[in-house]
Image 1 (spheres, rainbow, N blue to C red):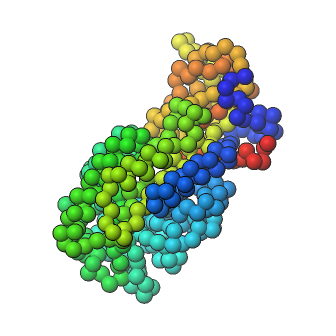
Image 2 (cartoon, rainbow, N blue to C red):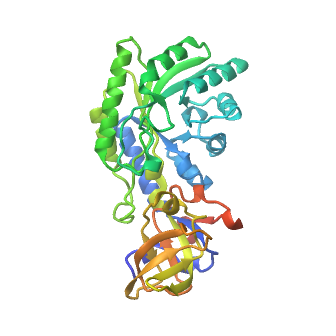
Length: 388
């Protein structure tokens, strides 16, 4: 038996149609417990980034632990409200909020809009005026801080589409303060995703301190600072590092960030909450010997998990059916695209048709990014509590 075979209820899997997502709820509970404890210890308000995984069962458990939600669409706001998350714990981010989404958030009475541009600020003010309400907003400032991550998921450099450029901050603040339908309550930042180097967050905190000093010279102070998300996970060791180091993450922020008296601190983790609890389970359709390499062809592909094709992302892949000698395979899917590949030269216990393959650390940006390309059905999800 391979070391991780015991983590998966193989006998139960034989009753299920592959491919599917399998969630280990014990891992999720352990993660949420650690996150909640460390957040309380460091006086941090946590809003889970729902874009990472919007499965209703996952959301329900997150809500039970008292987390707020970070949304980037009207659909996500509806999902959060349906899961029982109080509206005053919901933040609404996103560079392109449509009118109906803004109206939905205004009607619900959310905690805050994270505003990314002056035109967006003007539209929110107009829509709030039409409803005779005041919209609470935090300005998302692009801090021009480099993050050590893939360039597709870096968001904090001045060439990125996100946020208000540093040179425009004063003018946008002036406009926000002039609008009676707008209540400026915070500053929001986000530098990227899958960040493991704490010095990246330290650099962000230094920039936030500079911006706060600028505001102080104008006798301005906002109610809260929101540092967004970005904390990464260990994709290479999903069992040994099942729970991210929230303690170091929060302590780094608390050590480096100079909050003003009375200011609250907010963060928006997503991947770090759910990645390690989820695995994509697939069966081997064929083992094909090529001229120079051997292929393990799965019934799951980029329609179920697009991250390797989109970001060249690494996921640990395991043959949970076999304890035979290891061989190397290119692990590929059935989609008619050459990019439909989970990994090249992957070391697996000898693969045979019908073996079960687990693609690990797939709880974040897996199910939620799945598609019906090639008219394939959306994968179902199953939970450890139900399959024991």
